[in-house]
Length: 179
Image (cartoon, rainbow, N blue to C red; front, side, top):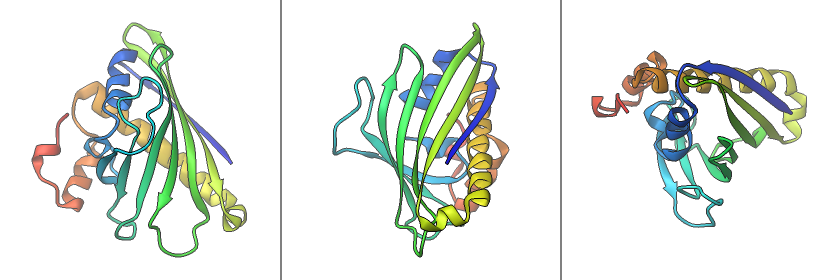
């Protein structure tokens, strides 16, 4: 299953790349669905990548310990393209999806405007094929929220209102509320 979403961000490709790729690990600063994240320190870094990847704790509605293990597989600074292989870990029960691979491309439209395209291919289990339509809709909406939250932090320097609310839900302090 492939899902693709796009958004226009009114900043330069370098400014978007800085938050999305160079500052890959602290995704909890701007993504509402992530409570905390930490660097993966074992494994091989993709050429040019600042880190191997990250473990991102999903919260608050996900099961305790549910996380995303995100490994950078392509870090193309020149073409502003980031590919990340994600596995869903510590999610209890039978899961329709085990992970996905995301390919994020920043395409300059002008000096200070870019189109950001997020394309993901889901790794489905048997149940995923049965629940194909709702999973596709959920992924599409989730990736659009990620893009919208990226837009907010890059354009304003402040997290999206969804993330502001998540800070309260996660019980995080105000120190995280600005990048």
